[in-house]
Image (tube, rainbow, N blue to C red; front, side, top):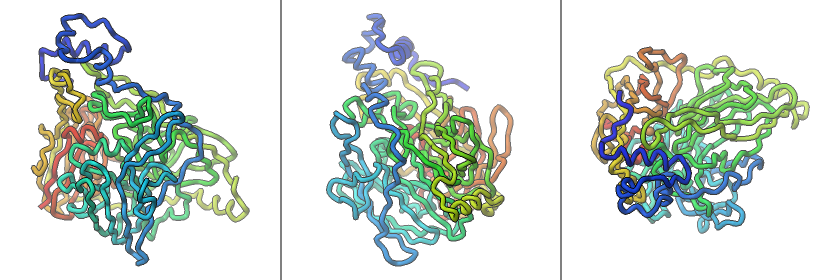
Length: 545
Ligand code: C2O
Ligand code: CU
Ligand code: CU
């Protein structure tokens, strides 16, 4: 397999220059004959800005160490049991974020009952939590107060294709749309919502448009566990506290800002006095979260994207959440007071360098400071409740394997870099950069064109093959799938446990085998959940007939 397709042979000198200028600060050694190839480029620093982005706010520009903020909650306007009705506004909202700088303008989701004028700044920028129950009839009106089209996508939920915010169903600026769906039994799990407009998903999400959904079951075996919600997002702020635009490198590797936020804040403090159930969302555009505690303490995983596992996976010390993925964890208070930092530890996803080779992985990131104080809040009654919750049920629910398969599908990720086009004047100052192609089955996304066709109700086995040299998280709309096995270096390893997922990471050279079924006719998107790659065309349409 070729490392990368560099389509333009003439660009090698330029590419070599880029690899130096992009990663060695203040390189002014470029020979003049190379300089002439930059025709029209304003200056070295202008070029550097385009590649890496302009100057950023320092990492301590945002305060750390505040108690973890609770998420805002979307108010149910319906009084009828089994019905959820609400309004969500997508609108620009100014927040005083960095001291001594101007306000940061986010694009934010607000409940229709809250602060319709200026937006709700009483809680985190994260969209309000939508708390639903299996069986609920849901009706959510989305009002677009942005200056560009948007849609609302219910990531992971089994909603009808025409209610799922496909890019082909935009809400124009100033417009609104009512989304309607009913949640079936078995859909309890941890989901999220975010816009999905054609080629503008990345920007709308990195400016703040994303929020959590929890669907609960009447027979949840973990209902007694205290629940904590940790919505992890990424923020890239320019020195003047504005949200920085994407640089060329952001488009290529997916955007990673200098801040990783949990419920909208940097390194919050968490106090754990009893064993807790954590729901964790990776709502970052491109950042992988390898979750671990810095003292190596163990935790259990009890759920994936689509709800509970059949049985807990206990004794984990690390768990990778790719962009878009969620997990349910059990974090124990332990014996006696202690303290640990909750980290996203170094994970090598093989980010591209501008010429050849890969960038080294970034350093560990502190997500939160956790103090464990078992029984600290306890009256006697509470203490005995804590004792009870320490025993995790050995089985959580039944998950039947999907099958047998009636059809087979192949999805292949590939990429091509046209270095010549990438280095044209203005190549990266456009909304979308020139010269980068991220493809599925050899093609970039074309609106309305079916990449694959499936029959409603047919269980299918899909192979997702990553023919590129960096990780890509595969995501399929409208359903939850099961991973069957993973093939790497000629070895095929059966997935050791059953789980419902809608997003699965695929490493370079890996082939992931999944079983999946769609229950309704219509178009479903599937794509890489690095949002820049999705916008650049690493997306296809599954036409269900
Ligand atoms: Cu969360 Cu089509 O994506
Ligand atoms: Cu989705
Ligand atoms: Cu990707």
